Image 1 (cartoon, rainbow, N blue to C red):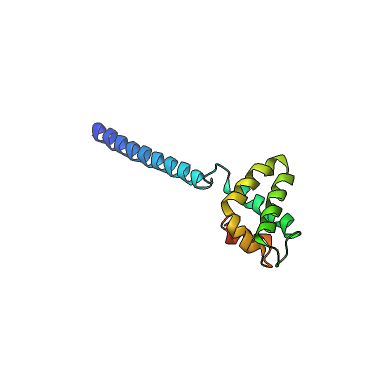
Image 2: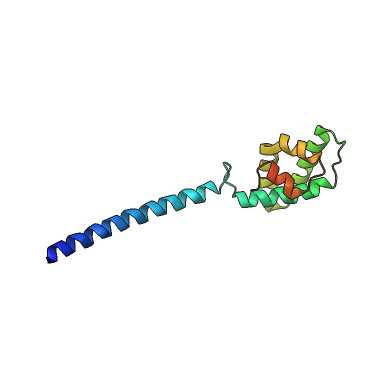
Length: 120
């Protein structure tokens, strides 16, 4: 009888350990999904996008050419602080065409960054 109780406890422990291991792996995969391909957290990419769009929007108008918008985006990245410069350049490189199209609209930073999928 004691042997049966021991075996049942051992079985329960093994099942719980396997379940816990699976949950840890899923958790690690979820954390990796929050990273962009360039290693920048999506949250930072979203914040960077909003900050840059807010600054660029002041200098871009509906009739601005694509080259003017591209130059304004690059200039904004150069003027960004140390922490924003690298994420800004990655953002502009990755989403350039979408940013150019969206900056020609009257949409705000939240809408633009959501439309280009830099934010959720």
